[in-house]
Amino acid sequence: MNYTLQFGPIWDNRALILDGFITTILLSAAALVLAILIGVLVGTAATAQGRTARALSVAYVESMRNIPLLIHMYFWYNGLSFLKIPAFWCGVLGLSLYSGAYVAEIVRSGIGSVPRGQRQAALASGLTNVQAMLFVVYPQAIRAIIPSLASVFSQLIKDSSLASVIAVADITYQASAIEGQTFRTFEIYITVCLLYLALVTAVSQTLTILSGTRDGLARRVADA
Amino acid sequence: MPEVILKNLPFMLQGLATSLQISAMVAFGGTLLGLVVAVILYSRVPVLSAVSRIYIEFIRGTPLLVVLFIAFFGLPALFGYQTTAYKATVVAFILFIGAYLAEDIRSGLMTVKPTLTQAALATGLTHGQALRFVVVPIAVRRIIPTLFNQYVRLFKFTSVASVIGVSEFTGNAMLVNAREFQPVTILAFVALTYLVICLILSGIGRWLYARLAVN
Image 1 (cartoon, helix red, strand yellow):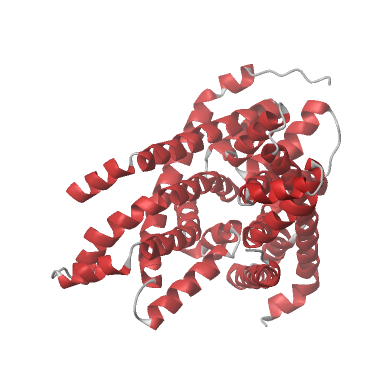
Image 2 (cartoon, rainbow over the protein chains, first blue to last red):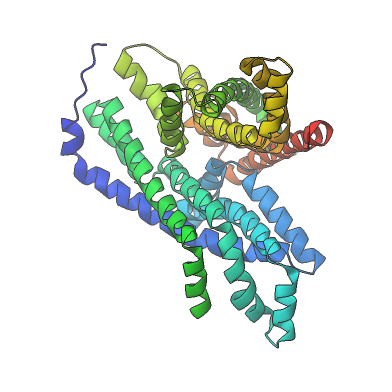
């Protein structure tokens, strides 16, 4: 081994790394919000009475999650290039449509875990369909699905690295740029690894703590 | 089929063959690695268990693309050896999927009741034999759906190898697109192909599970 580790050049480029890290966080956060929206809609449709809604929901989930994320990104960035969507939003669209399918599966199983009687009782007490879902079914479902959601969220954060391929200046993209300038290959990628690890751990730990105090969470949800 | 696809079909299918080849090798290697790591964790081997935990936590917190960059750029620079994009991809993917498979197999091992192991030991099997002939077969047959989920995921992931220049399916398709510039048609074809293969793979998983499941 004739290679001496030098982290100096990495430290010199900290501004770029920080910039990329912030882009990664923004990208993941935007995709997360959209993925949750898609997931709740599609997941609820999977438990609907109507056959069409259920079929559409299954079709969405099966088609979206069986196509590689990279193809999703290329589709918005290269395929629909005439729309001139900024690369960042191509990344957000690709990520959220893809992860939304995973969230939908979890939401579906969460709704399934709430006893049927709960919704029927809510409807019988005069709540509308939407109110019954919002105030009775979802608050109970969310308690069951937090651990699975945590793993999908951390998956999403890691998957956001693929946006670097369509020229979103996230942390992986900046790492390649810094590597090209400094040739400190191993150091830069290990640094980036540790930053991802920190971000993913922070997000999943926060959610685990939330689910640990899930009675507290349920109370807060119920009070709201 | 659109003309642009027909004309470039051999080139793209060649890429698809590479994708499938990589997937098969990684599925085999990754399952083997996952099994070894899972058994180490399950048997609480001192030191090695700790190393395995660190390995799993590290990989599960890292994006595939970064693992791939480390295997292709980082490690060869660090240890001063030559590698090819293809080899680096196989190594990176085995290390990556191995961590997830290890967790899945370990949780499968945990579902096997301790009384079964005790019965196996009482009949005179050694600890190693009890694992090999009783616990592992039952555990693996129980987690077939999870295993196949990982294989599907792995097959989709092979598209990422195009980023470091492996000429697999996505990479070849994007090359074709660079020449023909019909992105919508080409991407639709690529997406459909992945979709069909993934659905077939999970179908095989369900079929195997229905045939082999132990309750």
